[in-house]
Image (cartoon, rainbow, N blue to C red; front, top):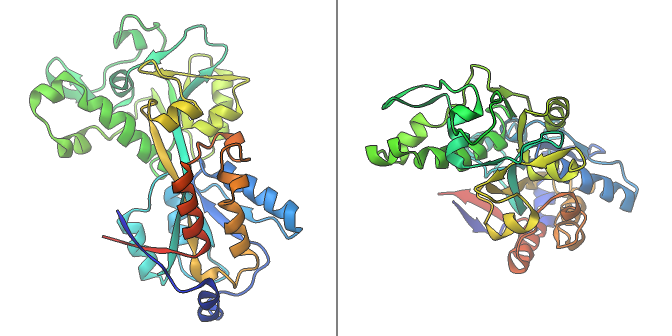
Length: 344
């Protein structure tokens, strides 16, 4: 949880930091593969509007982006990083150690973690969180004991499911998507098991025993490029992919969603909370670079503009689920005025 406090004005930040960061021409944004298409869309819109060089946007994963972003102050270091989860305490400490002591956190919208398949699949999939856990976890209950996962086909988990091999492509451990999927899907599915409920196991036990994805074939780490997962699904009608809703939204011509508990991911079900696997999206800004890196302040303002993150904005056209009006206005004010945060 973060305690917010208002920093010095942007002009004061620029004056203080003028010697810390040289004025390279392009803004540099790193981070989450889920946030990447939103950052890229803002970069393209911004460049078209002002005629300046387009910001350089790199998909490094949430964890990788934090490492780059927190590396230090100066033109060799990134100005912003996207994240599909909040910054962790260890990442915050890394930033502080390297002199990145004034950061603005921008919570700009929400996203659902989608499980998708090729439209060529002839079965309408609807899975529970428990079935997802039993298919993809490294260890599950077997004959009353916690053991290595023996399941190889979906019908072994539920006879109503097809007799097809379990195969899911998903993000690596450095990805915020992986972190969110483990917490929101794997932990939740594990907690619903009779083995866990009847055994009286607490959240610490669940975290320690239900977080590992299997490594024997049915779950395949596909890297930080979600487009590669989309390509693999298009080539295999029985394979599933795990990625942010925006990638499903952009590929509905070839992909369809796997329902979870009878609910399909959509802007409405994610916003309402009916879809059980949803998460907030963030961008972090290095305030020492505002007023020093050309156009960074203006780029932040465009990122949180109503045209971008509002209902009907160009990011919602790419799958972003907008914040409620009051929360969106607060995000806009905090972002433009360089509000900083500290960790409890």
